[in-house]
View 1 (tube, rainbow, N blue to C red):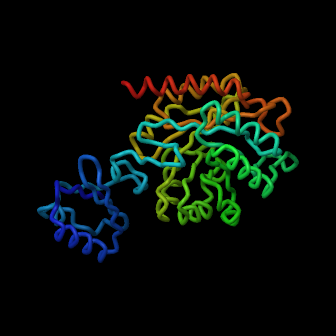
View 2: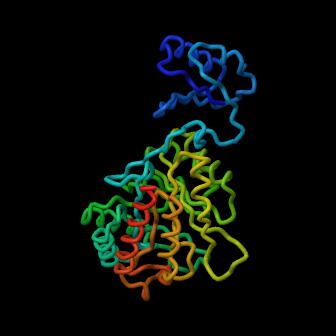
View 3: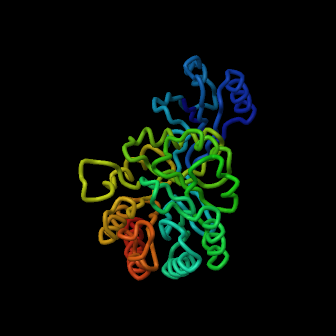
Length: 335
């Protein structure tokens, strides 16, 4: 349920309303927007008398929200959420670029890539210290050593770090990582999502391979219900009947989610593409659809990469892609 207040509501009446709602076991989430103030009510609102609240002088209207996600719902929070990481912004008309190798392989590799993507215009550096793989025999990252190398790369370049966390028990290892990423395999790892809700770090939540928008938003709700509203949704491609690519990038999710939620939405074309030759086109399609950013795989030597080499851009290809993405985003913002 949402309560839309009139302009400049009487503070005493408002305090009384909030106190009464809390006495009913309802959690109240106020949102002060550019044009109106909204009280988002979370809990068992079925026993709340809408007519009683509507009769108050300070109330403009009362509406029931049918969707099961509340905190992530745009009806609760009409204005876009803007999440700041260093000098980068996700949401609110900005376009943030995350770039880096799929996995941290060595000091030489991560430092080379970090310096190259920064020079090309990346806002954040991505690198996985722990990499889940379908095969137990494949390279799965350097672990704690990978985190140390990421911190070294940040020290050298100043770029904020993005890395994937797989289990709540790993949180102490990620204390110095700027943005935590939840991969597609863990989108419904509710124990992990609850733990992330108790942190104050931005969380990139990737969509599961076969999940609906509502299921995706409900996973975001787990994090937000714990008190952490810094959630960034990331489309990385879903499983369809088409075998020629790793996944089918659902570009349509961008405008749809923009109506359903106030959270930033970014795309990860590298995870969807079967080849680096498609990454730039998919990234540009996401930017044209109104995405708030993109995550691109970049490797200094893709032919020798230990993971995802075929879909990794070289630094030079990344530089050219950055320019085209910035140009498209600027054009979209001018509409």
